[in-house]
Amino acid sequence: MSSKLFSTLQIKSITLKNRIAISPMCQYSSLDGFANDWHLVHLGSRASGGAGLIIQEATAVSPEGRISPEDLGIWKDEHIEKLQSIVRFIKSQNAVAGIQLAHAGRKASSASPWNGGRKLTIENGGWETVAPSAIGFHENEAVPLALDKAGIQKVISDFKAATKRVVQAGYQLLEIHAAHGYLLHQFMSPLSNLRTDEYGGSFENRIRLTMEVLEAVQSEWPKELPLFVRISATDWADGGWNIEESIQLSKILKEKGVDLIDVSSGGAVSHQQIPLGPNYQVPFAEQIKNETGILTGAVGLITKSDQAEEILASEKADLVLFARESLRNPNLGLTFAQELNADVQWPKQYERAKK
Image 1: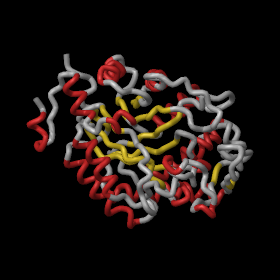
Image 2: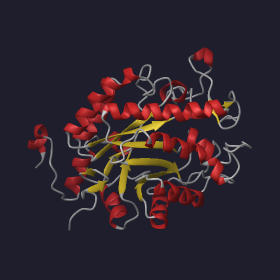
Image 3: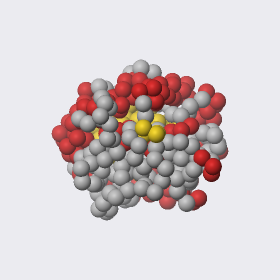
Image 4: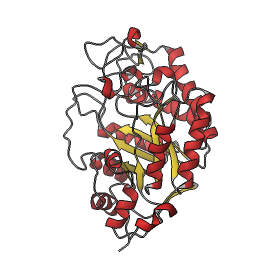
């Protein structure tokens, strides 16, 4: 029986050679937003390792949109050149080069994990953060600046300008980050958005910024190339964003031309209660897929080839995104192909190890 994990997936003009995607994962290894050889080797090795789609880490559309000072950025033209070399290598391995565009909002200006991960003050190399409302993620930290209309327009124009650079860099797929408690998710969740203007209150108002960012991105992004949106299906907290709203949003995104919903969860509030376990987020991907008809990607503690195969074979999702397991094993695609008896092309340089 042929493997579903190693079947192709056509999305608009792009064909993925398999259903294995490398999830965007922050590397905290950049200086002033610039990619370097670490990013080339990290992303490139997963492409040579057999994954069909490589999505670059959350790449900030503005300096203040970075999670940490070491995040990748695409807010100036000078960032493009190194990104082009990364894209070139990924494509040379018959993999698709994707990028995730992001703005961290109130979760910005944080130290990298190995430097403690705490909020950085301006004196310690941090910056003033922005959010829908002046509420901090943690109670004991400086509150963010509530965005005014001009600030909101800047966010939208930053996404638009970043998309133009994404096209110049040669990426074949773009994902908008509207999950994990970052800025777009902060607007969507009633736990972080207490606004009383047209960007707060009702469901329509809370998704307004995401829709405006989508429109700005689409004005620069080629219509024939795939466009994903990553969402948190639930806040895992009382009174927060929930799966019903995620289904409603996914229907609208599908109507607006989004191709796939990358279904994650959580991140909006520090008091969330997440029941971690294998496949813990897969039911959300399945529900969104079944109720809207849009393609979905499944993420979260998916570590084994037969586990991924079952998710796809039972039509719970259309794509499986791997994060930590791909850090443990850059050659995930090649390993899983052997385990599932799928005959795949190896890099010529590695072929002698195939059998």
